[in-house]
Image 1 (cartoon, rainbow, N blue to C red):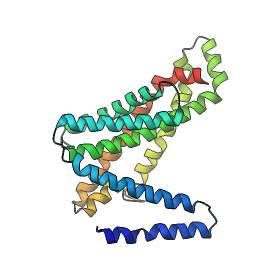
Image 2 (image 1 turned 135 degrees about the horizontal axis):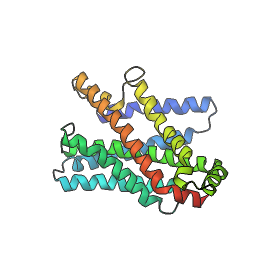
Image 3 (image 1 turned 60 degrees about the vertical axis):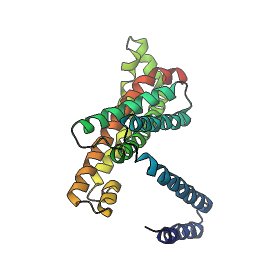
Image 4 (image 1 turned 90 degrees about the vertical axis):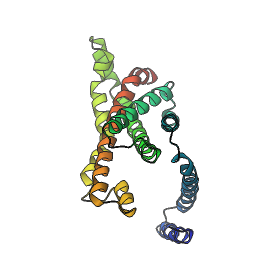
Length: 242
């Protein structure tokens, strides 16, 4: 795609702003500023990827993955502002990412190259952040609503972890809903983004859809394992915080 095509595509945003104004949504400025911000961020990302995807050192690739986890942990902390959440977020997202990516490298699904590992880690880290944040937010709400029930169970001799079992289960289930819905719709309601990108790049359709399936399975595992670890590391903090 050349610059002219990119510029003309911005007409979609212009029409969106006009439609938002016509319907009285009042968020025309937000749409416009968000579109400009995303364009700037993606252009910067494009220049960075020209360098990052040229890295051949495994140490360098690993360092970039750790940096992604670091940034995701900051975002997670900013959402909840609970003492110690930055470290537990880093451990949860980092562990989930490692447990997902390492086996795929070992069995040869992923090649140990920057072109494959860095984008794949970006997908896993970003989606793990969403799952972990969703599970944690839901967990805080569940504990707040069940506080008296939890305290009563503890008073009767139950461990705090056991008393919070229902809150744990409901929070984890909620964090999985987007992933499960996405898997149900993939291929029937829509073609997922990675498969679209590979198809537009000229990849074999079967190769594209199989790799997309691997990504979907990876996102479910990483999101669930990261959420379990996040809640397990923070349930005492949450009870004390409330």
